[in-house]
Length: 246
Image 1: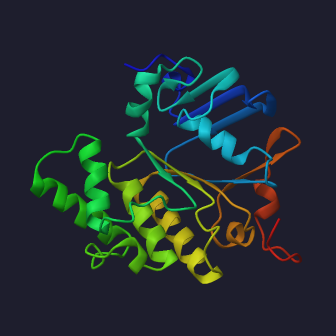
Image 2: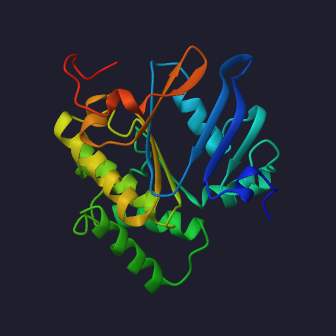
């Protein structure tokens, strides 16, 4: 059972109060307050090195929380035991900018590897789930392909399919459009937005592409000067100037 944490008394999937995060000896973020729920689409923005990715890493136990109260899916991230982190991560979908697909295996084999590693058994059940998530991301005819035979956008769709395999309550997407062109980026964020709305999944995404915030509204938090501040109101209407990048 997870160690009791603040989320046990709330319907929030992520609940942080007065959290402090360090990278090695350096304080990256302090006084972080967050309350995030299922079905929300949340952006973290800010300059490189401002703490966006570090904050994301604390959600899946890759980086420790130094101070404050930190709850993710009922786990106390201040006190979580190493042996419980894989159990937490099975309830999360994590999307990386660099795909991290196994290059010597087909799309279907990549997905089967994850399912078997997370305890799935039965060839029929595994095959059916793979077909289901590939349909979800519009890649139902690509299971036989190797990663290098796919475009960047297609590879990112496969990564989203992989993240959805275990029906996660939270998807964490770290710059998922960073290596993609504008049109493909638009398609990928639309897909994540649809998943959030239709599946009731909490999606948390870091990005530098501010145009996406206008096209696909959500809650917006900026990491700046070691603080996390909600700035959703700044993006409630289309920007009148600027090139959409920070």
